[in-house]
Image (cartoon, rainbow, N blue to C red; front, side, top):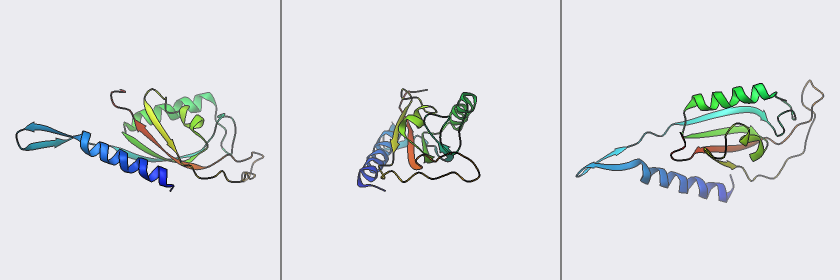
Length: 132
């Protein structure tokens, strides 16, 4: 994990801790629940029709509906090609997207198909406040 990504996650954790606590009565606090999910999204690429797992627009819509159904505040993702790929599922007005800064790897032929790989990085989708 890069230093920048570690710093961002630390800052995010600290802000959640501070924002999640609110005084209800003198001397007492309540903590807002934070829902975190992990999702291996299997070769999410941009454009959607590229990579080892090409997807139709109907499949992209189904993935978007699945993401909404998770009702998570933070989603840790695996096998993501780019921020543009993420934006197909997580609209920028509702989500802050963080993609690994790892160098791009070489492409390869996907197993059992004539497709060529895209990048497979990790990412976070973080729900913006008041984005319901």
